[in-house]
Length: 293
Image (tube, rainbow, N blue to C red; front, side, top):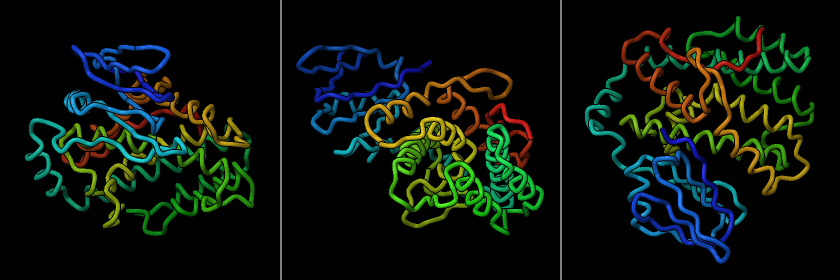
């Protein structure tokens, strides 16, 4: 099972040879077997990648993320065909019952707010009580937008009353970076399962290619939030980015077992698809954060 997150930080040439990713730069040559790689992130824009390697990475369903000149995730490699039965999966996705999708979104939002409330309680912030109230007030398909109300209370408790997600700051840069990494992981799982990322449960922005992934990732945001809170970034540069990349290999509990976060994403995403298709939300397997309300 793939488990490595490979980050290319120096100007390098990336090539494919006999089942291996070959990374060459002026100082060294490193070979890593593709079977070990879950995510490849190319941070340095002076790097080059061969088409042969890109094809093999796609075949192996390895998530490839390219960064911009500021080393922020900018784009990713997503194959057209994620599974052998992708045509059937697409028909199935289009035929998903709207009520089942809405029910799934309600359950996902509840878990997201529960994670936020549990984290605040763990930190000793009284605001967790307000989030607990929002959980009890949650309506079907979150008709009263308790998710948005909870987010405001949550972020103000973590980062101060003056904090806004719209401000340019090291904290927001770190949060955005962490969320973009999680989004890429979910894009990978959606495509590998044969579905398309554009058709969401709740998100339906016509300009968003990743509506479904944005829906699915909500309960996993807590892991990026926790990392950024403890990081308390006064700047957002190379070291801070690498701390967030390390999240992808963090051990978390899901379905009663310890798993790498990347594997947990796979288990959770597949459980959501199964729950929608069988109209049984009890099948959804959420990650456990260790926080109790």
